[in-house]
Length: 110
Image (cartoon, rainbow, N blue to C red; front, side):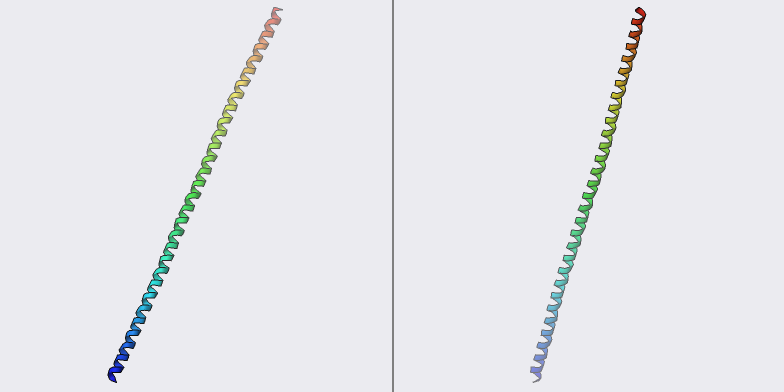
């Protein structure tokens, strides 16, 4: 009887220890899986944030360069127009002065 009881007690203890070990192993695997998933999510979020920031920086830089280029082209166009206007006014002034001189000379000769 003692031997049988000891055998049952030993079996129960072994079963309990085996069950506890299996549960611990399953819990550890679940925690490892959850931790891996959380880390992967954090890494993915960080990568997406970085890519988004990079894209926004590029868009901002492109906009700034486009604005600066437009401004420079506008300035160059204005300078060209100013130069052409000055040239045209000088030509008109010269023409008017020559006409007046010619008229005066003709009047004198007449």
